[in-house]
Image 1: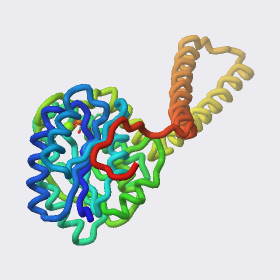
Image 2: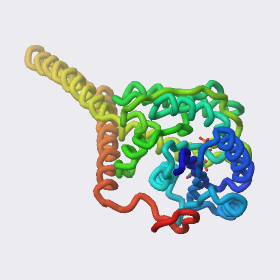
Image 3: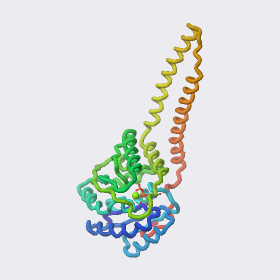
Length: 311
Ligand code: UDP
Ligand code: MG
């Protein structure tokens, strides 16, 4: 009976695997329950797989799932949760930004009866001010748009109980925002605080483009409010337009002096066409996601597995 499963998504993290393994083993040994560590190699092009296999050679409790290509962080999380067999499942980044030692505290909360224990950053070291600022902004925007309570300033680092994992595994959607989903399911949620470390080695795998996609996924999959916002815009501008129309017509009929209004016409045109385009592309965002969902492709393809009995 495995008590704790630790899931580690890893994309080109060769230099971080060995030190992470070491610290995980130490922490988990301190907790003193049966455990497994599952690395999800998200189609890495460096030595990540061979590093994981080295860890596995040293300790059978280390397991590997290797994707056929890079499917993205959220899919790696998903695969990890589906393969984990522990009573409690912890998800942790491979780059040692989430200190493994925090798991002990999370596990204590779990024993107290919590289903979701997320780790909230007290501080983040050595990340660019722009990243910190945009991340802050993103969480505030998301909070104001979303109907699900999503805590501010958290990463993926969290612990889930078996029943929370079961609930999560029922979700087949392709555009997922894991941090939101764990709150969407409900149950007893609590948090522990930690200081986020610097990345141990390598570069961040999230380019700004990827972050924007993640943010869009998060907002679009958790809220329809952007659509409603545009309906409101449309409504207000229609009323304003109507009032102006009446004014100009009356003015022309009663006084016969048409206003020469080339500038106003063009600016109004440009403004409202811009608004319309934005609205259309926003609808496109939702439709593209509907399309992805209805295609019913599998979420990811596994190329190699080590340490799992059946399948
Ligand atoms: N990751 C992944 N697939 C990807 C991108 C990232 O599995 O396509 C993993 C990565 O190896 C790391 C975690 O997701 O374990 C978080 O990524 P990263 O540290 O680059 O993000 P940041 O901490 O800079 O937000
Ligand atoms: Mg990181």
